[in-house]
Image (tube, rainbow, N blue to C red; front, side, top):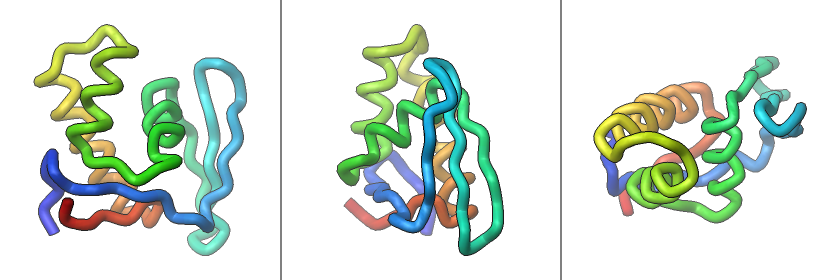
Length: 95
């Protein structure tokens, strides 16, 4: 499945998450035995995914909260989405 702006993302309920400080967070996949460090933007995306959202919806919110232009945000969030889907952190579906 190609990841596009209309792709809907939802959390994998088996991922453990903890905020380290205001700038970072960590996640643990018990099934995969992997640990992930998140910067402030990635941590915010995880928080936004408390409810399923499309990549476009995530980008709109990130552009509002962080100093980033729409084109850069979309490219980076799409790349991040692919990574977290590939690692089983979130599930993707057609919107």
